[in-house]
Image 1 (cartoon, rainbow, N blue to C red):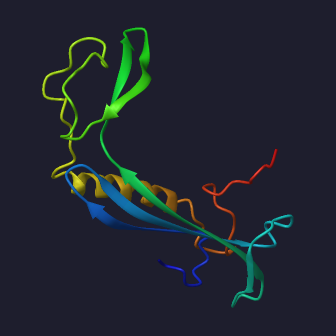
Image 2 (cartoon, one colour; image 1 turned 120 degrees about the vertical axis):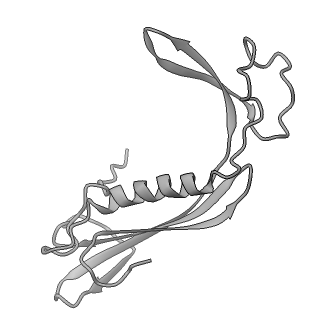
Length: 156
């Protein structure tokens, strides 16, 4: 992760942990650094003085994400977007044949879903999403300005 003193308020990193025919797992790391001058009422687990002579609040999160195919029941109408009614079952090659859980006949060649040979597409799409979030960082003065990807937490 690029955690050096670059002025970016959000640093994102992801590491693929495992890719198989039926799942793709990643480890996500997010480091948030905001100048306390921009977050006067902010509360952070860690504070530090940076080279530019001001205080920065730090926070971080780590998340494991697993992507895998699932079969869902969807209602489609020409008058509105499709609506997901319910999750039917996991969509791996271990999926049982239709047993009345699905309304209507199954669509041809979609019953046994898998992610084989799709790792590059998943990784590219995921990387593009990370890139979009990185573009909201301000890497020029003022340093560690809150980015639009980081919003206030409102406790209820």
